[in-house]
Image (cartoon, rainbow, N blue to C red; front, side, top):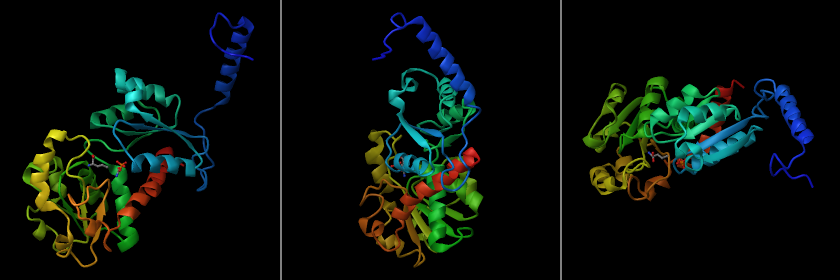
Length: 301
Ligand code: CP
Ligand code: NVA
């Protein structure tokens, strides 16, 4: 039996042979592995690191499945279990991970962490949600809207609730895809000022949803919000619940979306979530398809 327990108990010739073999294998790996760039296994030979500093169901599973469907492999890493969570800098983590993996997806708190990771990584980095944005979600949402109703350009999208990270990515998408976005919510929970040029604000949800083609909401308390703010937020947002009465004021064929996880009977009623205009399960499924395309975009394959 050949164990490897310590240097001083291993034969010197064996140690030399190990280093020679390591160098030979390193030299044989020229550049980054490339898949065939076909639709079947474009990520063959690629390793993708999925880093989570917050909980996740959809993002975790859809990225993991998406990479595997494309022939690649994944490593799901918890920030708390990495040296990252014990004082190693983001920049150093990015430099090191880039020597092992071909792509990094990170879900984190501060946007600065994502940007520092992207600045110092030498492989592509994908935003899997920060306190500030959630772009992969909204790529899936645009795809979902268009599957059901055709081009989203020129349509009226209404967000009812907290002006949070998911809303921010909707606002970014409104500019890029050319749809109108109305925010309806209480003033203290308005989106950040930089987004206000991209949107219309209407405090009265019943007025906001008139003529809407799509109504969207999200949790009233995000993962980065302190639990101490829960009661205050619920009080502020109660009037912005998406329910059948609100949906009835939108266009008859208006769709309903929610990135999930949802809190039934808080931001949305079960009647709407499970109703005929809801496309929430398609939305969740499309995370998989949209992210596969995002990964191919990043890797150029
Ligand atoms: N919508 C979304 O990102 O869900 P998870 O938090 O489960 O990943
Ligand atoms: N706004 C939510 C989205 C979860 C997918 C949060 O950040 O917790």
